[in-house]
Length: 214
Ligand SMILES: O=C(NCCCCc1cc2cnccc2s1)c1cc(-c2ccc(F)cc2)cc(O)c1O
Ligand SMILES: [Mg+2]
Image 1 (cartoon, protein in one colour):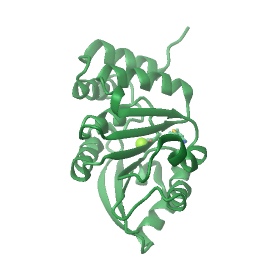
Image 2: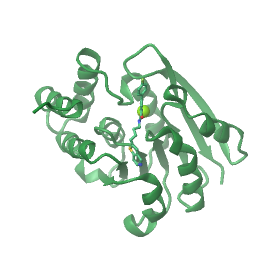
Image 3: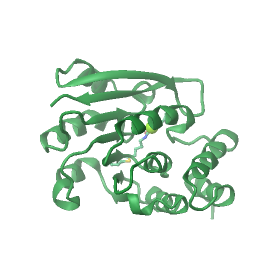
Image 4: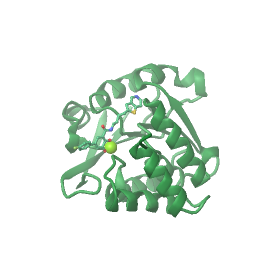
């Protein structure tokens, strides 16, 4: 039977990356996506911006919305301090199966909790299910029409504190116009746009970094 693109991506990781070496996992996926098949990982160019924000925030608690195959999950977790935790949500069970294996190959299982399901269902349960108080950093990379409602939901559920950072992928392509308008005009956020390109292409895209002011 025909393999899927995530399965072929995992095979490339297992062939070309070193077990326990997150950077080699990231490199193997980027090579696969540049040389073989495009895939919707945040990619190397936006990935460097992601790295710099993670390093600057040095978060103890991270929420990632949208795991896909675990590329950004591994990129973020490889930069976290000891004892820091990353919770990542994935809606597609087939992608979750692949992501768990990519995360395992990188040797980062202890820092990452992959949860399957929809953000709208899980966000209200974060505190009771995972003992989370607030998130220091949230990486939004899931359904583009859920960025705004889920941000409002996180506010309502008390998951953001003064200084929490939201970093959103794809604010230009595919685009998240209602989210951008909100974080750029709300007095409760200080927003900054990092111009870049859609992963592995010359098409414009960028990341929006927004600080919650409380
Ligand atoms: O759709 C994108 N990512 C979201 C997949 C949503 C799955 C989930 C929903 C959900 C709900 N709750 C919890 C967890 C989750 S995970 C996406 C698409 C492109 C793209 C595709 C074609 C194109 F021509 C140009 C850009 C580029 C990107 O970087 C992307 O991230
Ligand atoms: Mg994305």
